[in-house]
Amino acid sequence: MLDSTFFDQVFWGNTVKAYFLFGGILFLGLVFKNIVSKLLSRLLFRLFRNFSNQSHNDAFVALLVKPIEIFILLSTLYLSINQLKHPLEVAVFHYSKLIGKTKELIPVTIGDCVDRIFLFMIILSFFWIVLRIIDFISHVLLYKASLTENKADDQLVPFLKELFKTIVIFIGFFTLLGFVFEVNVLTLITGLGIGGIAIALAAKESLENLIGSFTIFLDKPFTVGDLVKVDGVEGTVEKVGFRSTRIRTSEKTMATLPNRGMIDGVLENLSLRNSRKVSFVIGLTYETSSDSLRKIISEIESYINNHQGTSDDGNASFKSFGDSGLNVEVNYFVTELNATQFLKIRQEINLEIMDIVVRNKSDFAYPTQRLISDRPLNNATEKEVGNDATD
Image 1 (cartoon, rainbow, N blue to C red):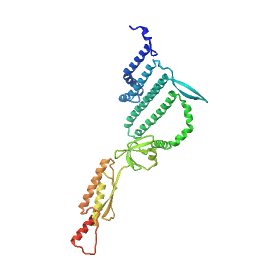
Image 2 (tube, rainbow, N blue to C red; image 1 turned 180 degrees about the vertical axis):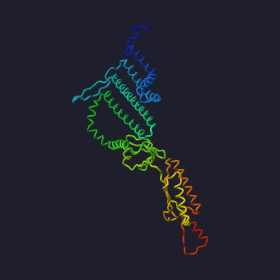
Image 3 (tube, one colour; image 1 turned 90 degrees about the vertical axis):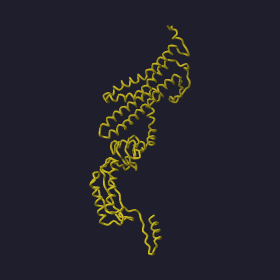
Image 4 (spheres, rainbow, N blue to C red; image 1 turned 120 degrees about the horizontal axis):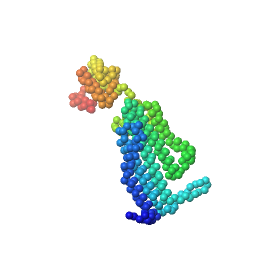
């Protein structure tokens, strides 16, 4: 059995007892940090039990277990190191502090540095936990929003998530300044009065985009999931943030547009339309008789208006005499908004128009030229000119 005097022996400025306490606390922290972090996560989840259901328990633990582990590890290291006296308990450097018009030199020891470093890390890990809790709350709110038909809440939840996380980060920043670096936060904020004006002017565009994001939420010109077109960019809205809106284009690229441009520019919400317009012009050869042309126009218009995928206000008309043929304009609206179905319906109508033209003994025109000469040409010359003209 060890003598009590053994624990009182001093090595490098510390007793054996202090070394044992250092090792014991550090060992327990490293061994049980995972178990304790999961236990604390499940206990903390009880605070949100009425807000969420039991199925969200695993998601909550997955979000919180890592930052709580770091928090426990840092706290354990801090407690264990504080069991020892630092062998170099002398001033390693000084820093100056202005007090009125005088300058005071304040000694900083190794112990002070260790305390400040650990305090800095512990505060960071604490606010990391708070940010993860915000992530969990937004996760639950997004799940509840997905159960409703209203898309406005799907858009609002990510915005509020970013807003509260930004507020927490600012609070954490000033907390670090106050507790770790001993900065008078109130004096600092007061001193930023004039500087704040300069910062506001420099951040004018960012402030305008932030105001634009609030305008989007209040006016609701679009919501997440809507198909929009603005400034030549067409795609599906995926996220509305503080500064910008992200749009997934038809080429599957991600376009980021400033919120100010989303509300100041001409924005088309294509998801709110009740049909898709198709408009084009076909050219028929000049050999087409007027009777055939009338029948072709009538049959095209009848087919379009009787098609189950279109509205009944389609039309076809003889538009003009073109350089190479008779121009017939066709306009109709497809009521199917799904892109794939829209393409199929448009293809069906185009193929039927081709059949209608052929059935009425006509053909589609293409660019041609005819050369007329008052001199007789031999066959070889006529063939050569004809080929050149056609080419």
